[in-house]
Length: 562
Image (cartoon, rainbow, N blue to C red):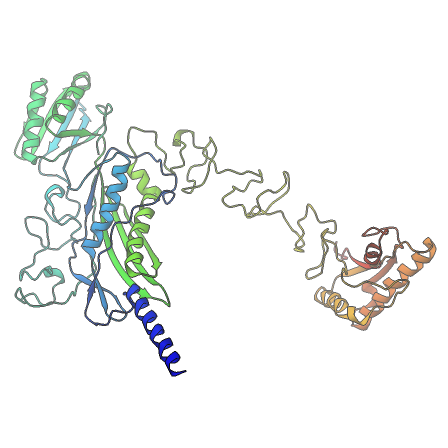
């Protein structure tokens, strides 16, 4: 006996130890910190709605998270920490892979972006063009152009170095504007006190004729002075007059026909020098995982995070969610993939990434805006050739909102797509043969107030005591509807003569009236009528059918106001 008990305890302890190894997230014995960075879990087919959406050829994906501290994510048997910049690297990698799978060329550096303004000369039939070398885009307004800014998204007002990164006077890896101990020398262990930060933004090229555009983007990876010089040389080569060439401005003048004829060749020549003239700015997504946390449940770990995306147009979108799994690693790996998928399922992101050469499709339903009769359709909703959500039963409520699909044609429905049920008895109006049934009354499949569980014995009109609760419900309905008057209809089976059954049906109706009066219902609210066997509910050819026909039915009468 003792040996068996010891053997059982040994097996149990071994199972517990093995379970703890498999679930190391819960049962690490040491209390020291743990560090984790999610892996890239590819987006699976079906996760992205309407996956074949229109997308541009080139996109810059930037890790805009500047916080390199190991942030506390949560603690169970020990603290877990994560580096948000490294977490963002995972998100950037997933976005990059998904775009490359679609044939998109992905860059990880912000280009130089200048603007060329072309406006009509009020005094002649010519164009005046102007490019300023002093105004490359500086989205975070820190004085460092985006194409050389290694820390995009620096909060406004924060002092930066020549690389666009916040100053860190004591070189402790914590920028001065977040450093509560600005004189602590390097080498000391520091905490991660900081304030909330973040802000990003920037831009693509097109290969169609944009000579008539009044604003053209000059995009290049080369220095601004080199770009300006090459642009000026190409204008001169084409015989276009330079009217101002200072250290900060280049202005030129050309007739409408001259500019239109020469523009394409200028565009091609500059492209060979890695200088691109485009109608719109490059498509740029700056990503940053701004928050991450862990929470433990009974057998699951929740990994919550916020993926912030800032487009080159300055649009800021937050994709926030939680993923649950038994293992911490699976939970956080899946959380990043889940929010990256949400990014690709965003209509605003899709429209931003859409190719300028393809037809515009603002709601991403596959129908171009110019023929879309139902703009703004939610992403993933099936539409017809007109761009309108499918409405299979033709009730005016689209399938994706229709809670009652298959409604017969011509039937009136409510906003949920369900047939109207005016008296609220559970039987839609188009099937209800007894409209106006009082609230709370029992009805049959035809919407009629019937006592379908209280029947009379053969050749009897007395109410059985077991059926009293059913008639108590009738009394309650009448008490709750004090203006209601009803007709109590008596019915029989077909055994016996017509005259006899007529009399019997009337007695059954009167028996119910007497019971309801005994429950406090005034007699002037109750009328009775007998129908004999003239309106059977079931077949009189069987015992079961005849039993169903020995019944009473209640019919509301119109109120005096009606």
